[in-house]
Length: 146
Image 1 (cartoon, rainbow, N blue to C red):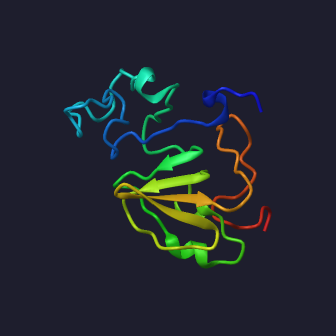
Image 2: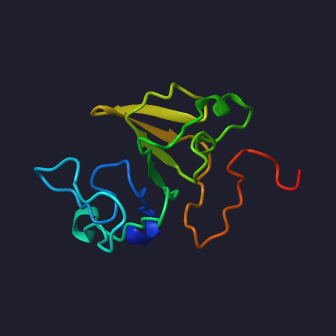
């Protein structure tokens, strides 16, 4: 595809709930939970993340890899529906979901244990997670116009 990592994957994080991602709280070696977590005018370090990291003013934003914040709800029961897609569980566009919660095994995703976390990889076709593109697949799994 000849794309830079920044162009190939959208990096996005929540405004809080994941150490080292919130505005004003870049990851440091000796501070897993930065005291500056919360909204500030300082963006996370580009050097640490390898590209621009989008942090919304409030809440969380979807991305190719969605790291589930502690405060964000997940609805694994939605994945039992026919034709389910990984992003239905968190109501955010994503192709990969990383969480410290075991949300079970599902046909629409592959679950891999990574350190003390679970990485869910969608088995469905790629979802466009770029907010400047039109996101055509309904997040709730409903049929458009129905």
